[in-house]
Amino acid sequence: MYNKDPVRASPPAPLEGWFPEEATVPLPQYIDTERGRWIKQHTPRSIGQESPIDVPALHCEVQEQISPLRTPAAPGHRQIVSETADAALVPSRRSGKMKTLAAIPCFNEEIAIGSVVLTARPYTDEVLVIDDGCTDGTVKVARDAGATVISHDARMGKGRGIKSALQYAVDHNYDCLVFMDGDGQHDPREIPLLTEPILTDTADLVIGFRTFDQMPLYRRFGRAVLDLASSNGSGITDSQCGFRALNRKSMESMLGTLRKNDFSTESEMLRIAQEKHLRIGETPIYCKYGEQYTSTKNPISHGIEVLGSLFWITVERKPLLHIGLPGLAAMLAGIFLLLQFLQGFAETGIVLIEQGMLASLFLIPGTIALILGLMLALIARLQE
Image 1 (cartoon, rainbow, N blue to C red):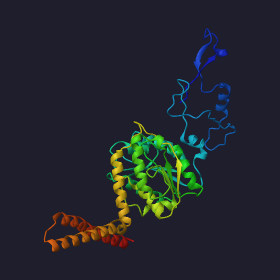
Image 2 (tube, rainbow, N blue to C red):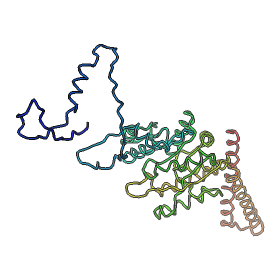
Image 3 (cartoon, one colour):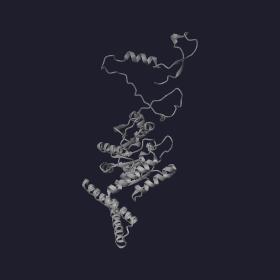
């Protein structure tokens, strides 16, 4: 395991003449041959007999921290650092007062998932990878890196992966749950930034905040639109960041309330937190963008999907307000135009087709919207 350094050795007295001059030989296993012979002669040979020799304890000292991605300083030499020794070097990374789980929903992230898991492990008690129907080597790489893996039979969406992680965290009595992406955009070394407000009990939900100068131009516009649609009047400035931490109260609030299985889950979590009057905090983070850190989701389709889901989330939560009331207004406008149409026909005997069609465009959709709003409100009341 260790390279044997050559030493300069002179021939022993009984072997004089065998070597014409000093020679370079490998370092023997026992340098002190006399002590080795004495140990061999005086060591007890019977099983269970106590040895009179007091062997001094081996003391090892780590001189430097070894990076697995760095070439060794001295060619031909290597050092092996065990996981236990490495963990002992970073005792302050993980708080003993709070049991923390890092959850990473994944779909085909075999390139980055290994390094994400390895970097996150010192900062958490366990790393959970949710396999959302991956078809590459994501599962094997994650397990080899030391993560626990939950696999879905098919691709069900990021929201379903978040629900699985919430259920796992609650079932295993975790105090803090940290969500992060598996594509390498989030830096696991920033986990303490998100867990600190949870540890000090100053926030129930902590969301990572990305400054606009970190993001490509096309992502800035999409984020601004989604933030406006998701904030619901709150002061949250980065509603779409997937790097976030939840305490136990937030986990239990989200678990039975989240409905969507797509990428709108982050926005839905924010809506639920506002409705449950949870304390929401933000902390600055650094997010990597580039060719090697690319999401598997197209930003345009992502934005359309989130906006559509937000619309239906809003409608489902208050159907009378967002469907029934506009439907009632349209129906009343249609009735008014219909009365105008009938009055004009009665006075002139002329059928104004344009006025009749306009009345129908208001009256029919408005009536349907009013009935739909009433039905959805009834269903929501029954579910409660």
